[in-house]
Image (cartoon, rainbow, N blue to C red; front, top):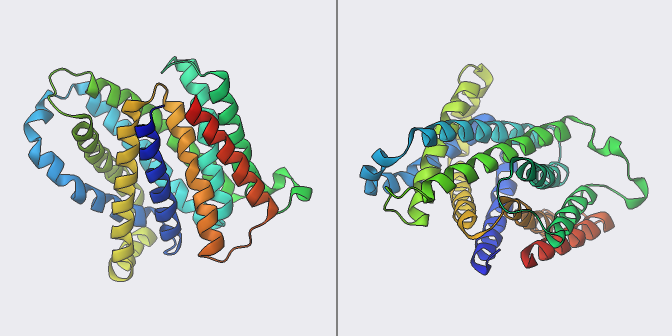
Length: 302
């Protein structure tokens, strides 16, 4: 993995931890993420206006992949809202960030998508996953699977599956776009255009979740009247976070490295929670964070 890709992913990790903590303060819901995603589309509109003619060169398969990744994005955000609604961010966040690491590694090997993982990278991925699972445990003396058997963790698992889905689809779609000789666009331009349509697709799927539900429709009105500024800021941070990740995919040999390195957002979120939200810095959090960081270092050296 190149130094440039590492820089993009570290920046993305800070942004990801930030918008999750911000979103938690307004009790996120599918309605919240729908409005945030629409703001993301608004921010990316100039990229479409500037490069509108090039969209005619997009192959039909790309539009199918955009529809599919939007579905996975909507599932991810719906489940993320459920995880935060039913539990603490210190439990849900590490889980939904840890599980995709192992799932992506397994699926990329099975699908032969990207170069095979070396021993150093696999060791790092395992350490990242172990660290993510240790962080939410209240005490190292009381390790129990019951800690993870609740609604929040179930939603976190679904959210992780959504992450796996859109990451694999994005990698496939962006590879096709970057290898399309008919598109006279830079890596950054392709990423921004793709991100616009992904957000549009996710918005359509989120509308299918929100609009039929009366409570969700009422929540839309509440967000517009009371939390619009925070929602807009979340949408901006989500856009920038995702854009940096998409761009970084052009500078790595295997998408598993991207998924694993992004877990740096977990120790960042833990530090934010301890110093900003005054949450206790338990030994399990500190040990888990150190284990996770060690894994990230191994992945970056692979």
